[in-house]
Image: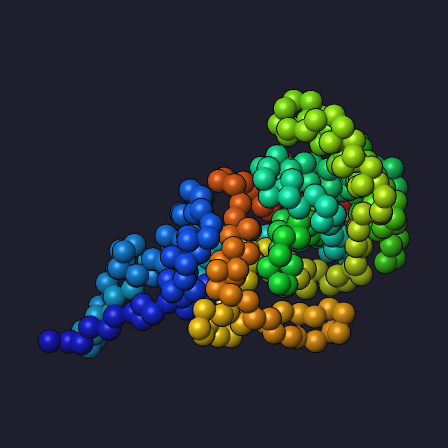
Length: 335
């Protein structure tokens, strides 16, 4: 009888921490329905629980059993193939121009409100950032921009840190569609000016959400929050452009389909303590952090997204409607 090769089923990384300590977590915190789904999928990813398929070699007869992955977008082991498929689709959409990386970050004062109203507040973040970029494209370049936005909700230590990564094509299409209007050199827009407009649009959209009762605030509470948010400038980072179109996809791959932490960053799980690496940006080196397994699970689950919430979005001439026709016309304009 030919040998049967079964896949390894020992949990790794995040799934192993869940396996060992999810009961300890539930002693201290409730497991909400959306979290229960994530825990179930990660614990059963690539195990017999989710089924599988059998491959048999035509020559030697060896049988290999392969279990199915959970395909949960929060799972660290299931993002490679979706990312590769998505990037393959984007290949045909890259234009021969510079691309600028712009990061919109929400002040941490808003973290408790976002965590308790994710669907509403994250939608406001997308809407405000996209309207800001489109307005600057119209006012500064005289046309419509095209850009891709990706939501991240974490920092390197797994704390809440809500920000949008935007990859912006270095030019705009004139309103009548007859001219490509390129950016000049390495300059896109002024970060300080972007910050002021973004803050204004965000607060105005948030105010309308309060009036619709999508967010529940007393008038004095919202006014107090507004005063705090206007005390300090909001952080907008406009980074150096990606010069070569062939590098754009590689650049995109760093930000799309990422989860809060990769299994490779988890170095040990001992005596209920988790040690993982993080980038210390101030000291410009990699460091390690050790926290309890319960605290690790709490921080990981902070970054669950609402059901069917789209975290990668396209705007301007890259929006889903008429994207192919727009790109074809732009290439003709660029010759």
